[in-house]
Structures are given as C-alpha cells and as structure tokens.
View 1 (cartoon, rainbow, N blue to C red):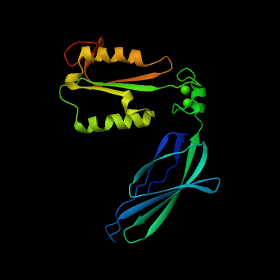
View 2: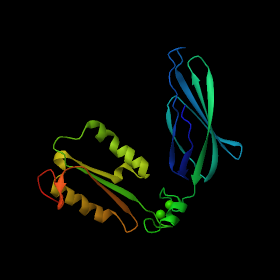
View 3: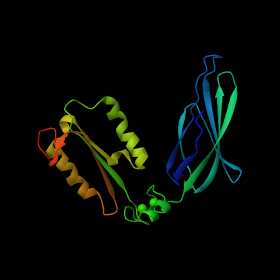
View 4: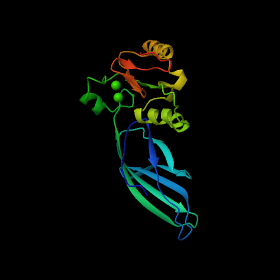
Length: 201
Ligand SMILES: [Ca+2]
Ligand SMILES: [Ca+2]
C-alpha cells in the first residue's frame, strides 16, 4: 500500500491512490477499497470502490484523517491511515490563498487565475500515442485546470500558421489574470524553433 499524505484545496478533486498488489503466494487479489474520511473525529464520507484510484472533493478546508481499507477476494482486509491537508481557496481557481499571497507577482489574490497550456511538438519523427493519450489529462490534473485549456499541436499540425492562430485565439480568451504555460519539444537554433513546415516562429 502507498503511504503518503494528500494535499489539496477546497472544492477541487483530490486523487486518492490505493496501491495494493495481488499476492501470488496465497492467491490474494484486492477486490474492494474503502476510504473512510474523518474530520475532527467524525466520519464525513465513505467511498467504497473496486478502483485503485478515486477522486474526492473536500468542500471545506482543514485537516482530514483518511482510513483506507483494502479487502481481498478471500475477505481478508488491511487498513492504512493518511492525512489530507486541504487549504482555503477563496477565489476558487484551484490555487490556495496561501500560495497566492506568497507569490503575488504570479497570482492574483481574490481573482481567478485560469491556467492554459500550449504544447507544441513539431517533431517529424512523430509523437507517440502514449504521449498523446496522457498529456492532456495529466497536465490538466497537475495544473488544476480543464482539459479544454490544454492546447496541443503535434507533428504536421505544428506549422507556423497554426501556432500563430493558437496565440491569436488565446489572446482573445485569456484575461490579464490568466497564466499561459508554453511547452515546445523540437529543434531549432538561437533565433527560434523550427515549425513543421520548416519556418522559424
Ligand atoms: Ca485561489
Ligand atoms: Ca487567484
């Protein structure tokens, strides 16, 4: 089982991970996971699932005690304990008040800082399906933003014209409190990087 505490902000889903392994020596296979969520000693929620990963939204900030019980196919069970530290996020943008106050140069305290990412992969040798499949979801999750806010241009789509069009569009949808992450994987020179159509943005 995985032992580690969880950190999050109020009203944003926190990914709870149960790592339990089948034991070939006695034929034990995990079949059920039960998460008991306590606040101030009171049970506030119980999640019963067959999935090793669940998302839970803590609606109020504070410290929570989590008890994870794993049951196997022969009704044996074992429990582990975790803490979840959930911070205040009054402007509901997924970034804790505390962090915003510490970095007022990046975040706006009291206003939503929507996050966007523009990932450009002008790689003629191709971007694997695995990268394509997981990039949006994993980025959206780690940035606490929507998958719709993650824009990707892979391979032959990563032309200068398309890259330019994405920036134009972002200019229209983003406001001054928003944050844009730009990721480029490819080749170029000191003057820029090479788009798929062999131009240098
Ligand atoms: Ca915030
Ligand atoms: Ca903010």
